[in-house]
Structures are given as structure tokens and as C-alpha cells.
Image (cartoon, rainbow, N blue to C red; front, side, top):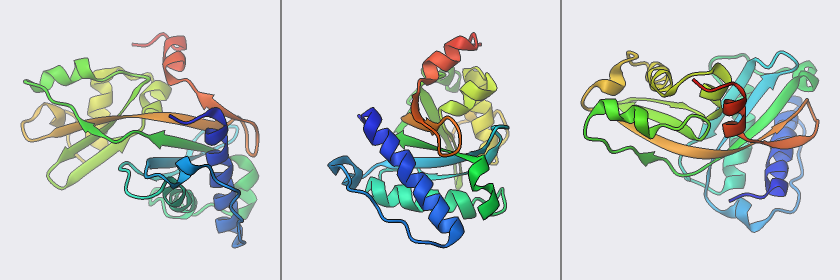
Length: 208
């Protein structure tokens, strides 16, 4: 859906928003392709360099607003409003990588029996949303690849992200949604931006 150039632009914009938000300066948006004005889900992920530890991750799983608006808000929020981390400081900016995930709309996985969910989850392709009552948790498709999880472990971990017990996906009343993402990431802070092939990364790790 997105070209490599559009993905690179999304990361450059996210980087610009993060830096301007942290430094309290203004960021001038470049000319935008039409696709940036279409509604889309998006997540912005910040990781440390070279340690590659999570430093912030915020986004919108649903296509609620124009991509550019969601991207700007997600980037600023990842830098300052992720409740798991303190706000990014100016001196950290050259030690933080920026990654943007451009999402497809989530679709509920329909099964006859909960155990069948395992067969519908593709590691390296799918992200998951777990929902039960008011509890809801999301994990991006790159997460199980990075942690070498299989489909069952991915389901369990997504339950815990929602604040549920690991086996909540086996309980009646739990809804499971999946989505896909095109992921673009800096290779180092302010470095070259590349499209990540999660299926290839999963294969290189041998899968599970």
C-alpha cells in the first residue's frame, strides 16, 4: 500500500516531530503525498541505540484520522506520554531510533473454538488486539519476531498486555483481532530508513 519513499517520509516526519516536541521548537511539514491525508492507523516506536531497548511506543490501531494527523500525535506521544517511560530528554535524541508502523484496519478473527486461534495467527505478518470487556491490549507484528514467540505464546502475551490472564484467549467472551503493518525503521539515529521484512526476520531466526 505504501511505497518505500512514502515509508521513509513517514519516519522522517516522525523524527522531526519527536525532536521538535522534545526541544520545544517548530517543525515545518514537507509537501505530502495524497496518501498522508487518508485515514490510517499508525504506531511510532522509539528504541535506544545501540541497545535496541524500547523507549516509547504510542499509536492508533484504527483509521480514525488522516495519517499525517495520527502520525504527528503518535510521534509526540511516544516521546513524552508513554506511561511506561519518562519523557525523552534532548540529550537522548541522538541515541534514539525511530520506527513507524503503518497499519491495516483490524479484523476480528472468527473461530468455532478458541483453540483454533493459533492456526489463524501468522508470525511475521499479523499484529494482535485482545479484547475482553473493558480490557484491551495490542502488540505489533514485529514483537513476536523480536522475541521469537510462536502463535500460542503471542496470544498469551497479548492477553497479558491487556491486563488479562495468559489463557484469557481460550475463554468465551474474549475477542481477538488481527491486523498487518508496513514497518519502516531507521538503522541508527537519523540514519537511513529501511522497510523491515518481518517474515524474512522470522525465517532468519528459524521460527518456532
